[in-house]
Length: 201
Image 1: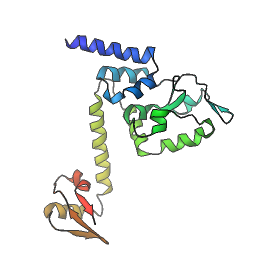
Image 2: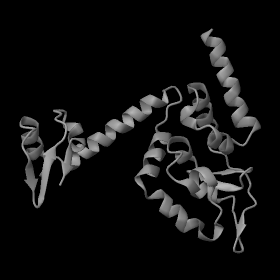
Image 3: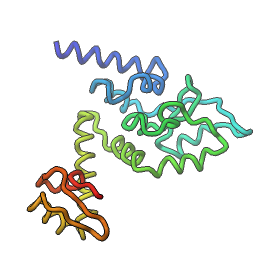
Image 4: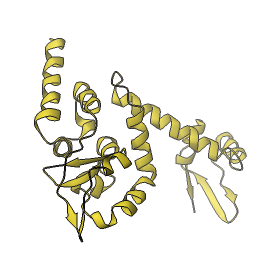
């Protein structure tokens, strides 16, 4: 039974990456809502790099741009450029790069640089680069969340650590930092949940 289900999933995935516009398929049904077999095959096939007839303000799309930006992909059906990592792992963050498609060839380089800066793009890029075709996507997200918590803990490990310890020991007392008075909303002893337990007034 399990082998039959797996084979059917592989056939569906193969159909997506060979017979249709992959980007349009992923917009219709996101990568994260697909089965493991489909996810693996989509990642294995790599980003689509079709020839596009996009032109704006006298400037046309150039095929070599795919090589300059290793996250760039395209859709023949939508005649637009997309961000492959964001399309897979952060599908609703940037409308232009994951839903509509980028078509402003005049501002291509500057808009690419703007898209590369946000944390959401960097996280999606890292998830794709560390994606193991033998590993489930929920495990990848779990690891990414753990790394995000560790980064946050390192940032607040300085002046706020003593405050966090004091609050954990006596969660009902208000305390202040500068001109802000803080009250504990939910007392949790887990250090990583500290930022989620406070409100400033």
